[in-house]
Image (cartoon, rainbow, N blue to C red; front, side, top):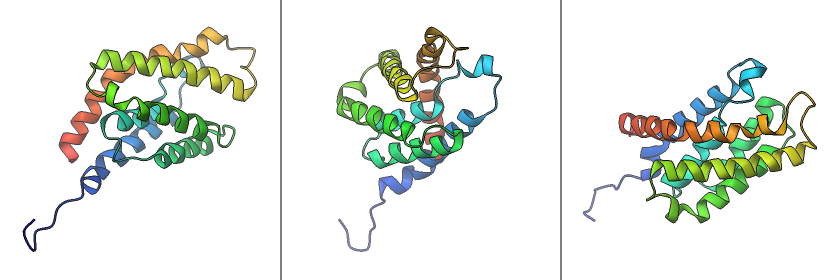
Length: 166
């Protein structure tokens, strides 16, 4: 390295994209929807966190997943720590499979995300002690299909944002 030439820290270069995508996910997650529609909405925050663990795990740590889960718990009034635990577990599993997931197609990644979403949702039901009587289990698990459909769109949008900001 030449004297006087600074190497740019990639984390600092990617930080605007990471922050913007996480803020956008929080806004989408907290956007008011009718209860009949909201139950089917994709888990935007989880999807964005998992995106960064697949695409650039060296840029985010497990603490990021935990922090975003706590932020979601506080924002939605969920049992404090439940989403933090689930986000951290999902991120750790994704991180362990990252080398297998990154080179795969968007559809294969979406199938992984959907399967992980089903596990996430089932554990969430268990943590909550069940679902309200007005919601059937199959209706709740449909969110995994929403995540499957949202994944390719999310990847394209974040990649576009990364090109614009990075």
